[in-house]
Image 1 (tube, one colour):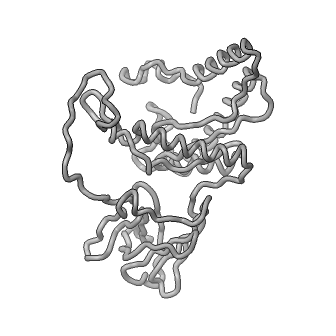
Image 2: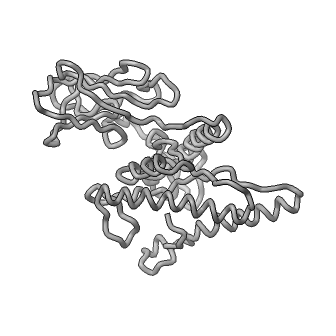
Length: 310
């Protein structure tokens, strides 16, 4: 979230010095678009901005690393830093582009949610800034691990070509709902969690953009990690519970209890006085099955493989 071209900084590893200047490029693109539109007798304006940074800014202790050569900022200080930088970045980007296009009004920014502490900070920014919208996470679309080029597969934190297309469709849906349908958009997100009577289950309430909530086991098998005892799980359907000491609490089932609620059944009643921390998301997805066979394909140096070979 900087207008500076950090790839030109001598401290940047050589492998990362690949041009950069993406902020300046976006402004140059806008200038050229205005010239082309004028030549056709048309006006040009930018409806929305999309932010996908590609990295997670994650630190070794769960904080935020501002850039490659700066020390980790511990949470929540690092999250507040990221939040404020993203809010400021949207404002500056909007101002600089509007100075080129001549359009009135702020340009809204739509962001995805990356991993870890920075992902939480992105949601914090969307809650703080009225012109910044959280679309949602992206871990459910194919990562670049599913893509192959030269002699290797891509990185898990990046998206495959199909992942980019599918998430782009999700962004477009949210842009339409906000700008065309004037919806007060909120992404799928947890609102509250509470122990039920008997301390044998936890009920988690979600904000659901389009109820009912669905635990999908059609596109992917149910995601789970076994807890040792048959029929119990350390994580289930993306959920994990821990007590105040950090020990994992075994789960027995995860089922929908209403159009916006999930009920997590504990393998044993929670002892009196114990508290529960509920976590949800990509770190707790567990195992989805084993690869039973791999179809080998030709490796073509320096060229893209046909899509149906992925």
